[in-house]
Image (cartoon, rainbow, N blue to C red; front, side):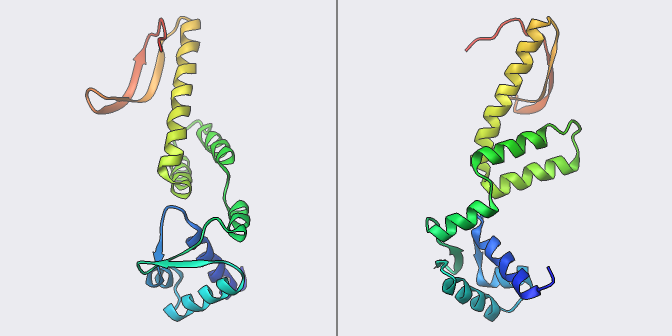
Amino acid sequence: MEQPKQDRALRMLALMLQRTRRYSVAQLAERLGIDRRTVYRYINTFNEAGYVVLTDHHHVRLATGTAIHRQLSDLLFFNQEEAMTLYNAIESIETDTRLREELKSKLATIYGTSLVSEKLMRMEKNRNTKHLMEAMEKRRRAVLRGYSSPSSNTQRDRLVEPFALTT
C-alpha cells in the first residue's frame, strides 16, 4: 500500500479485531512502529467512523455484535464452513512441509485453538475411520499417522491391521 498512514490504520484495525488476543496502546504502538498518540488518534478516527472501541484493563478492542463489526468481520474472516474448507485444502497438501504447518497454525491463531481444534479433532477421527474402513475392505494394513496413545502419552505412527470397528 502506498499510503502508509492508511496502511497502519488498517493493520491496527485488523489487530483490534483479533478474537484470540488483546493489545494495549503501548503494544499497538510498538507493533505498528508509531507513537502512542497516533494510536489514540486512530482510535478516535475509528470511533468517528462508527466503530465502538472498548478499553478494559489498559487493553483496547473493537466491540463485537455491532452491525459495522459484523460487516468488517465478514469481509476479513472466514465463517466456520469456509475455515474448515480452507483447513481441508491445507491438509490435502501431501507432504508435511513447513508452509503447511504454518498455514494450519495461522488458521488456529485467527479462529482460536479451541474452535478449530475441536473441529479438526472430529475431522481427524473421521479421516482415520475412513482410512481404517478402506483398509478393512481391501484386507490390508493401515498406518495411523501421529496416533496419540493415552496410556503411554506418546505420539507416533502406528501400523494396524483392522478387522472390525466398534462404537
